[in-house]
Length: 494
Image 1: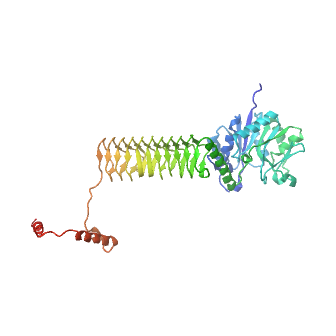
Image 2 (image 1 turned 30 degrees about the vertical axis):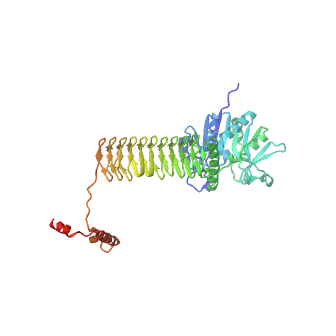
Image 3 (image 1 turned 90 degrees about the vertical axis):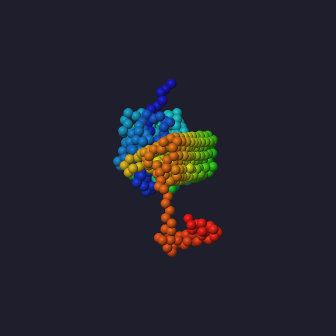
């Protein structure tokens, strides 16, 4: 049994993408959890290539930074002048003189390309022992794309770019997807023979096929099952179209896996997200990054989750969460904001207009409404009163508040950290808690109320408030029953 061939992947990512009108290189524009380049690198992963070469040019430092994050083993090869695809592949292979076997060339802007299609292309190429194999597709409108030109016997004759095609060739709907597999030794032999005698004055990689045919070398065409996989991106309109196509593909996959998406057209799920069977996602929901949604959980409507874990049976309504953990059976929203390191234990509740940051909320504990919880630990089965603020920042450092289990804190409380409220303790409404409250104690920290009679009449004469107060006083006095003569004397005597 022969050993498997060595494989090298070359990704062409040097183009500026002028029509994107962006300071960001085209291949770094995001699309459902990955950049365009990230999608292409992911599609090539099953090849288990010995080396991956990425040709960079415009925005090279930005592309290198992306590679360091998502494919640190990849080697960036700088193409200082963009002199064509043939030139790009040649300098990539010059940077890997030890490479042998099969080389797979991919464009960096085809994010819908499936791993299965890449592996099928390479399997067909190696199985036929071809010198070169091109991935082709039948498209409804081939405008702007290179055409596959076959001879009378149906064999590949050449690949012709749109600008160099004859009227008869322009009528061909079989297009070059810009994805190839080559025998590396034979490719090296012909790369140096490429001409710049074309409309753009560049070295076209596609001319390799004509040279190989002329030399009597076997070349092949592998047809993609779905032409949308081969679609590239030249401007933001096309990017938006690709995003919609990928959304539909991702959503269909999850629904077939047992996830309910109540309105797929308004549900956007990154390719990096994981959902368990029987999860339910309602309309206008975005699930991003490394988010995970557990079985039986309900997320949406109007929810955005970024790198957030939602436990089985939990509910998240009309809320935004980033880097949070929502425990099984927990409840969030509506209109809640969970910031990084917000962790809700089983059956905890974060309600309306509540913000939580870097805090743990214990099992069964509730923060129902109008509250900020920052840098805090709340025990089990506690209740935080409405309009409370965990005052965690002294202007220099952040400090932590600890609320025990089975505690009941009053409405409109301020917890000035560092401070601790013990297990089973209560705090009175309107309190500013600056000292620890022992377990089982009632913490009261507010001034005694003092009423200044007649203040509005004296300080705000002629206002609507003064007139309303006067009417109320007169109305109250008119309802007092007259005293009897004896009572009047008695009162006067006192």
